[in-house]
Length: 344
Image (cartoon, rainbow, N blue to C red; front, side, top):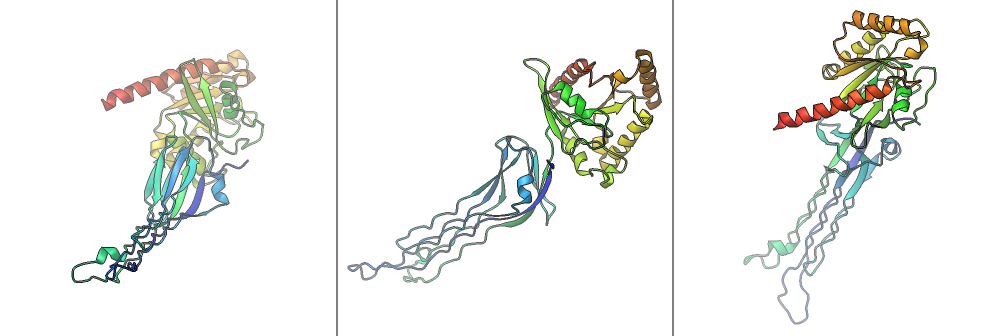
């Protein structure tokens, strides 16, 4: 399955119905006067965030959307029927931008949230509105207005509390499998993960959080190398980043250099993203003897001059993962409490 997180579409709201010119024709009313009705408003286009959707793949096949036009007015002062609004469902976490103006129209971050993206055209007026003491048989009327047309960019970003990042084969997929019910593909070749996987980690009956497994980064990712820059965007919504590092790489590469490669890509892409809270998680400790693992742990932390939290785990053996998840839960609860206090 290919993950599609961006789509370009064209939307056109409905045109308003025309007002009409009409006069009363009753047999016994010789001076009947005007009775032309107004047209109906054109239908608008509305996006609704749907928590049951998780990709924008449907928009690869359907790229043009048009709402219903309003009906023209009728005699006897009857108003034309309004066009029905076109409701389009999109995943929660979808950002909508106008491609022509580069204006961000809205960000759908909550299930059920609605966003008007194209306003329907206003209705035209019938000749009943132009009647006056000096104009008893008006033949004026107005046409309905065109609905808004827009070229839109839809961009979906994963909504998660915690994002995993690191080089390919660092063990991110294994970690999310170990701590949640998510079952991403796991293999020993690069880019096993081709699209973000979400897992719910339940620490207790009352506490849980969402963790996202993002495809591995390589050098040059911020310029589109590998799976490209689009996956870095998914990390921008997360509250905490777990930097997963293979502490026993089979190719004998330097774990410290692996950390620095990813750090450079974060800084190139976004200073805000690079400044997010990031914990270091040294994975695959089960591939080393206990003394060797401790020695390598100390060496990596010292050479990086790492000031934040550091954890040593084995995702495959589920060693140290429970403690890590509990600490994450505590940190998220504290961050939330601090945010509420700051708002007060």
